[in-house]
Length: 448
Ligand SMILES: *Cc1c(COP(=O)(O)O)cnc(C)c1O
Image 1 (cartoon, protein in one colour):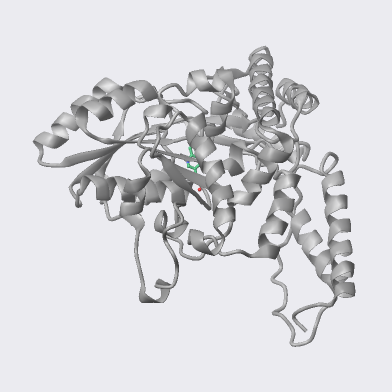
Image 2 (cartoon, protein in one colour; image 1 turned 30 degrees about the vertical axis):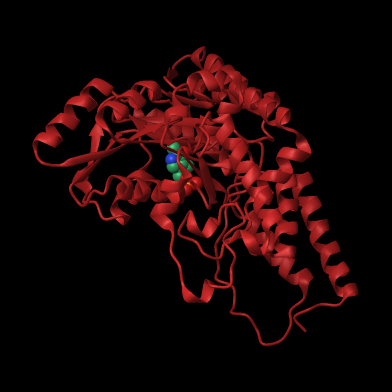
């Protein structure tokens, strides 16, 4: 009963395909958010259900949400979810190959490895570099912090240097790997003030602590701003620290000429975390950790068990279970490999370039709106505010209540700011023009 016959499979596939088509076709017109009541559905029954009913239930639940896949979702980091990646996922799941160890599916592991190799090349990492796909940048960062700690062999007296704009996943990783909160030191600056960082390191050494890791951000979550990666690399080299770059958002802009200039210095990193589920437009669940020296990543994660003795480890390919915490893992490579080959890399470079252009357009257009102030931002993030916090908050509420767009907010220098990021492959010029018109209208006649 758990294996449907051919006819049933065809019927189910047809129903799901029809749902998918209607969903994708409806995205352009769909409201940017829809309210819901989140009633807990009943537990599963002993008897079979009807796919049509279950699809309807799913459809309603999916509808009562922020339309994160739509072209007008500009909050946080939009991820459209490339259709080609969705199909890759179907293929990966239906074949269900085991890729934790290379020998059980060497050619598939080679395919995944080819993508990692290409990433390393794009980031300018040397021979001997490598990496592993993760669920997202948070887990990539966790593995990076763990690897840095093992490599430098520090205990609780190890110190990590970040800025106030570093993503909280670094503090979380530090906490999980056993560092007390005070071992994460905040270097001042909207972009890391490297000279101050240097003196903080000296002070910490004098106090008997062990500085071992400095984190640069390539595209801060609030502002998209990129730290001075070259200067941080030089600091790390001079002080003998591990240099980690959190490029979760900004990483893919390395594929563009403009982005590459902004990210200059990233090739000197010991490790880079980035999220194809952000700036490669993939569905949620795909991050990657790249490391300058794959051997260090392996040394920090490798483990063995008697039950694995039959597996041949001599393929010359990475055994991904040795490069991260997972043993059984999803075959994430295909959802990156298929889109890159099917669309071609140029399509990604162009789409990312388009996002940079659209963000610049929005920045310039909002700067001309009376009563708005556009704050410093980089890449495809735009940050702005009204005359005071209350007016800014009211403006965001009015924008989101229109249900045409969904934006988010942040705080800069203690003040409330509206924030948007142009990053969906579905967002184009006509969408951001509509947004600018809406903001102009709402700021001229603020809701009271
Ligand atoms: C999104 C983000 C993260 C966290 O990544 P997840 O994929 O959500 O785990 C970390 N750092 C930065 C800069 C981010 O933008």
